[in-house]
Image (cartoon, rainbow, N blue to C red):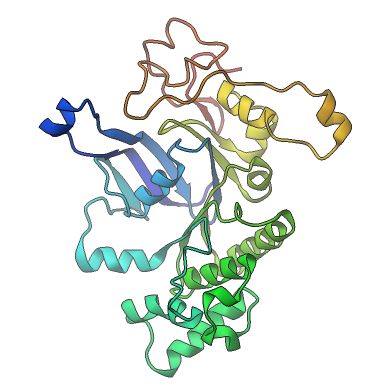
Length: 326
């Protein structure tokens, strides 16, 4: 990938909860959502982000978009540091960065027509006035395959797939450069997922968008992503081009995730051996020493229990945080 970086995260750390005397007495520790993340998102790519629930995927997206404030480290957008932006500069930045959320039912205000919901950002950023607002709302709806005549209707009048299209139209109306898609297909059935993937890929090509695509469904990620980052307990443990991740996974956690993906052939599905991970992910408030995965890893050594493996190159463009990659 030779495109210029759109985002460059450097040792990005996000911590929830401040240590106070009361929290110490109660035995409550701050929760570290991201742990010194180094990540580049290239202009024009779709970067897939996978991992179990609680691994930090949404926290990373929110950290890049400045929806979660960094505890330490830095985030650069197109070479400009945005970590401490405030006020008007931050508002101007957010017009160029949008996020589509998992649940289209709770993403829309039930008291607002869909036209009003889409128009809000145009009004906030003073991008259109008067009749032009209605024109841009209609144009945004048309981009996602909906008629502009639907703008006066309320969210409850639409199906789940239509609501997600409306959420995409809302994200597009400000002409963003980057969109974080946070589990946008998980509330839809398989047939609608295919249609939504087609739509996202078309919009990316037509509008020159860059995506961060978060999903627990590795089948979907394989289709849409150029590269895949695998997260575990707030850290990236593997990062590689999509083909390499699916054909030559090097981290034992990535291998376990891929082994859990079902195949459409019943015969193959019955014959294949499942790789079960023992235990549960550790608590982010009390992470284990060394590699966070060592308590569940079949290849863990004494070194893994005391040292934190860095994200290191094992092949061009393929990085793994593991002392014993396969």
